[in-house]
Image 1 (tube, protein in one colour):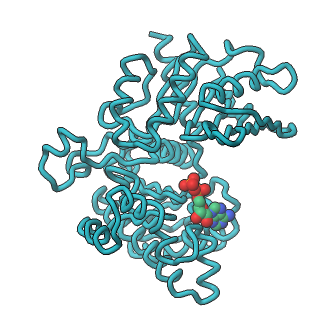
Image 2: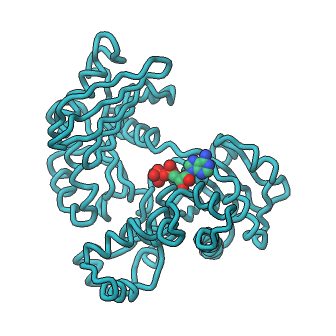
Image 3: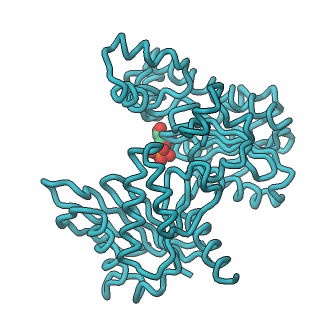
Length: 405
Ligand code: ADP
């Protein structure tokens, strides 16, 4: 069965077509500059082993973008399928499922209405996610549309992990609680880890470290998340590329007053001007930070040290929360590529019995690998994430389960 995966952003539409049985990618692409008045939109379509195909044309909305994607997929020359009938389902990446969606779901009108009521919780992403689904519902009638949520995998957290110390009314009436994000990545990586180790998820105590521009950790016991570092929004937790992560909430009104910022401006500031970028004044990119450290930049060194220290504290906390740790897993841009970050974190975790094979760790090229020494008490793994494949698998499992009922 073929599954189309869509990630719909405010002015972009990313897609991948999978053959789920083979776990293989048939085609992928990106439509950019959707809804921009002065410039044409652009599609870049890729098929493994073939030359890239590009189109530029007016792209007033997501529906026009999706129509172009569909036409390209079924095109006589560069297409990869004969008709849409070959697509068993479309899996949509959706930011927020609140506490209503603990798993992926086939979207009908009622689900769509519920998703619209979550826009307040993700004003940047949810409208675009919903637009993508609605476009598919009109242009791909009869094909199941599956919503796969960034929050869903974390819905197993107990109350003590997801409640904040505020009156319960804020949670019950306004949904103020920890949700966690990157759930699809944590789910994929934890499942792959169990497969690589040849062990069932039940019985495994695992911490998955998704370290990219946005970063988060998940403490996963018996395959279920018991805690995660991102919170009500993706702002909480680690030092990220441009996000501040954990800090005293009293700082927010204080800097608002000192810098003369409105509430939306301070929100923007904490999301886009802080983290590695804000601390170093150099860049949000870890490679630039490390280059700046080599050149003697002290602010970059401070940013790096706080970055590693905070990763260490979270691992320590989750170790205790789970009553031990069997596996530590690295994934995403930094986790997969940056051997120095892996080495520095693992050095600071020696007290937990973590021993990294330094040679293996440095020689890697972002492939699945066990990085710890045989006598390490905690296994350390590198597992490249594949959120799109996880979305395709979820959509496939859901539609085949509903057909067999
Ligand atoms: P996003 O959260 O936007 O998906 P990524 O997962 O691509 O981000 O991660 C981006 C981060 O990964 C950047 O800080 C970048 O420095 C780091 N990164 C990407 N490739 C490499 C590499 N080859 N070596 C070291 N760091 C890398």
